[in-house]
Length: 278
Image (cartoon, rainbow, N blue to C red; front, side, top):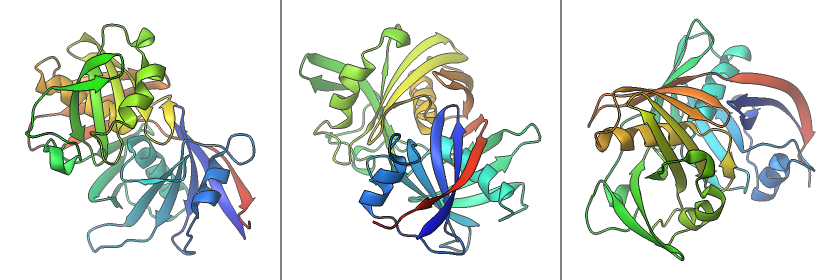
C-alpha cells in the first residue's frame, strides 16, 4: 500500500504527517518504527496521523506515534505542524481549529505572521492523574537515581513531565539522567525528562529527553511544563521566552486553573510517498 506523506518540523522536532481523514490508516508498531527510522525509512521523531473528528466539538482528531512505535497523548510541536498541514492540504480554511488529542481538546490558531498559537489546556498536578507514584501532591519531589537523588517537579500537559532546574543547561546530564528518569518506576507510563536553566524571569533555556524518542531539538509540551514549574516556584513571569536547541517558543501561563498557551513556528519540508507493505 502506497501512502502519501509530508515531512515537517517545528524547531527541528521533526514529523512524518499522514492524512487519514478520507482514507483510514492503521499503522502497526513495525510500520511506525520503519517510517521513523532515519536510515531505512523517512526518519522522524514522531508520526502524526490526521483523522476526522471523533466528537462534536472538534474539527479533527490528532494521533501521535513515537519513533519507538508507541502512541502518546500530546505533542505541542506536532500540534503546530498539524495546524499548518490541514490548512496547506485544503482540509480546512478556518483560522482557528479545534483538535482532539488524547484526552484533551486543543485549540490551534494560525497567526498572520505564519506562527501557530496553541491552547495546550490546563496543567494537571495530581499524582494519580499524571500518573506518578506519590502519596500526595507536592511542588517538588525527590527522585532516587543510581548516583543519588534529584529534585523534580512533576505534572501532566496531556502527557507526563518531570522537570528539574539546573544552573547550566548546556552541560546538564541529559544523556545520562534522561533515560533513567524516563523509565523510572515511579512513572507507570514513563515520562519526559526536562532540564531548565533560568536566565531571567522572562527567559529560560530548556532541553528535553522525550520518552520513546530520546533528546529532541525541541519539545513544545516540555517547554510548557518547564514554564509552569518556574511559575509555581515563583521564579518566572506570566509570559516567558523558551530557548531550546532548535529555537525559541513563547509560553504564557496565568496561573492555576488556566490553560497554557504556546506560540511558535512550523515548517513543511517536502512531500513524498512510502510503501507500507511488509
